[in-house]
Length: 316
Ligand code: GDP
Image (tube, protein in one colour):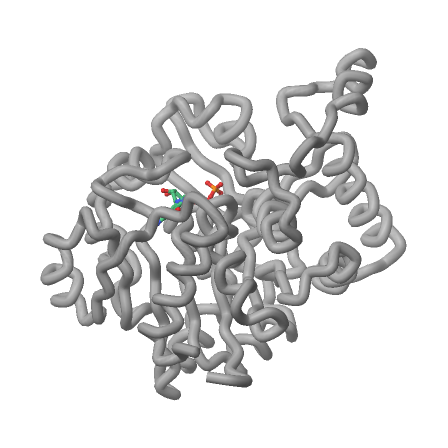
């Protein structure tokens, strides 16, 4: 449908793949609201892993195979930082570091987070808007047997080995929606929850006060809201989403994810291997789409995005 605007909610790698497929079809008609709960300070710089993963994918420069970071990046600065005795477990590539330097310097000059991010996106030629879920600082923390810790301590340093016993979003209660996020959701013809970790990627976005109300208002206007399952055959393709779901008392399956989104979405995309779960998902009030949801290359991203848009009534 020409002219219709779409909003996608995304975390890192899984979300970025679908966002890129949507961007290839929609260009500047796509707004991606990204999780900022994973953001952290490294070497005095603000690092935004999910924003930057979506940025590099939409700019077409992401590391092949990994999906995050910049293809062909080098690590000279990191090695030199380590030589000075700086902590080096969070490996930032040289070209990646330039983004964190530019962003932090613009923020220190008084720039607003969303505006600074939009400026950096334009510089890389990205037509879609990638919107931080809030300009305020929200930090995801997880509790393991060792106690509460920052998300990246668990995710990168401890390599997601410990079981997560609890999750909290520090600062979320005081965070406010940006004008850009509110406008995008008010103008959306359809909203998509990308295949991202529902607990620590989509969860923090939904925790920003006012976000759920805007999604509900969109649904009340008849705007379709769809989710794509990040769990396929009971497993996450990467990352700890499956173990985290189970440890926190949810079913590690597409149905478990659909239950988490009950009342929020009215369509749910499951992988073909999970076709048998479709009736149970439908019983939650979610129209089901069963298709191949594994995105291995640009063609499979574009195909899934196209099928999704068709299911949302926005086929070309
Ligand atoms: P992270 O921040 O890098 O962990 O990335 P996300 O929050 O976006 O989510 C990771 C989730 O994405 C995992 O549950 C994966 O199973 C899921 N995922 C990654 N690639 C794909 C894919 O091609 N298709 C689907 N359906 N899910 C995917």
